[in-house]
Image 1 (cartoon, rainbow, N blue to C red):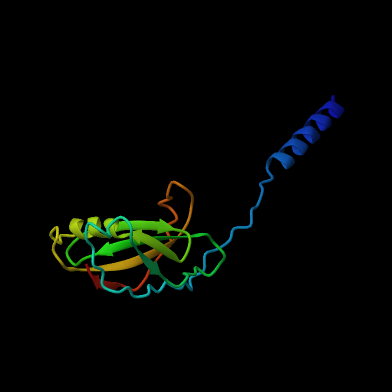
Image 2 (tube, rainbow, N blue to C red):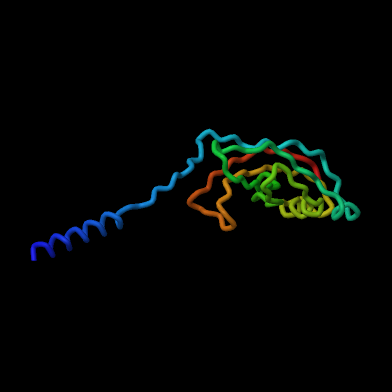
Length: 151
């Protein structure tokens, strides 16, 4: 009987020893020293029915850094004081070509009258890419400088 108790006790110890082990994964920490992208200037743009769908404006910026190798998604917004930012494009590279028709739509959405002229701004937001569905628990963002141009 004593031998059966020892064998049972030894079996429980062996099972709980292996069951209590947890895998430890090396987590990469996003650095606190991050570098925001710097958006380069664009010239003033003339948009009309003839060039709206055939011409593009190329926006370029310097790469962002979050202090560790991560995949960075860049989002380009058109801006205007007193208005909500207008999403114009997303990419994983440091430039994006935007059709003039899209810029025109953004300018109208930001309050510039159709067939009118006005000034809009642009900015780039760099964030750590966490997959096709954004994770609100891990939102590391860096916003670029703002530039403005006339449309």
